[in-house]
Image 1 (cartoon, one colour):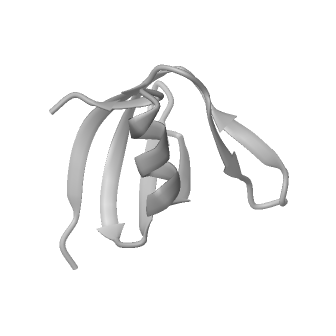
Image 2 (cartoon, one colour):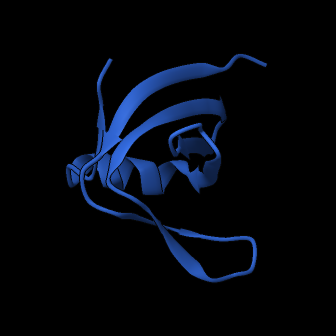
Length: 73
């Protein structure tokens, strides 16, 4: 399996569904975007990369279209 990693920035909170079923938000700030196996994309954030969420490709594309997720490389 190929993994592609990009440096990115969240400019507006991006919603995701947590393991408990509740809606959470990826906070504004730097993150990594890992493309593992479409249609899911991992977003990793936090000072030590301690937080992550797997988002459907469509959610990531929508966040990019609205400028809420900006790839830096």
